Length: 326
Image 1 (cartoon, rainbow, N blue to C red):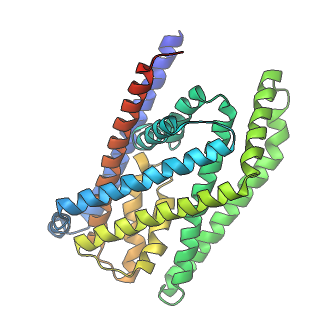
Image 2: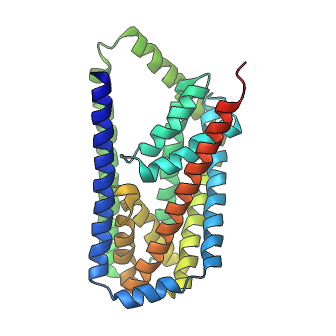
Image 3: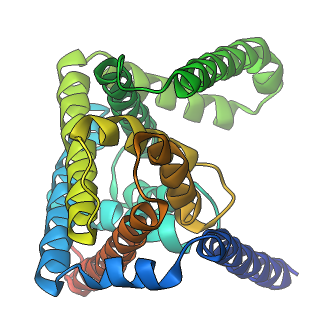
């Protein structure tokens, strides 16, 4: 009975992955339908292989910094993970984000290894939550920087839309916080003693990481640096495709497009990010086919990086399992 249940879950998971990849293909196909294909292909072919590989290397190096950031945060919560385990968790999570069914698929992979290897599993969970919050704060910081850099350059119509979007985002956050406060006691009432003990350990871990503001500040600075690196690598790819825009335009459009890609509509946000970039950069005079070309090449970097990360996680896992147990 249990085996049949697991088999059914795996089938559903694979179906969900297939549907999200199909949704990504449909979004990109819709964009291609309205854009000149020969000009798009020409723009993509302008990107030298050496440039693509250099961008890929920069992408992987930025994620290497991400490993150090994640380990710093979870260890501040008391996880006590070594560098090898942290690299396996992070690389596996990067692979899972692209190839597992769920927007939190990457976190599931990260936690699956970390919870098993840490002497304090609650700290891994708390640290991962804190690290996600830091990443959201870093992304939000880039959005604010982009808006501050564009007071005069931003078209009037787009200014109104940006203000409405920010207001809506703030309202959604406020509603979520209010719901969490109102439902906290009803959801936890009547739980078992074992569950309450686990919750107490999680609270303790969250207090540990929140009691180290210098760690959170350092993580936020590293997260901001990582996201800025991704932004500049995308802009460099766009230049290779023939799209030249002021960096301030990218600071406005890129983080908003990445936030739009969080919507669980396509696998890894593929297609949604490109559509958002086309819509956000077109008012600045960017040719849509050049924006899409840059976005597609960047997706190739992301997918290749995800596959490399999956291979690294697999090799680290094999090496760990081959070590003699004491």
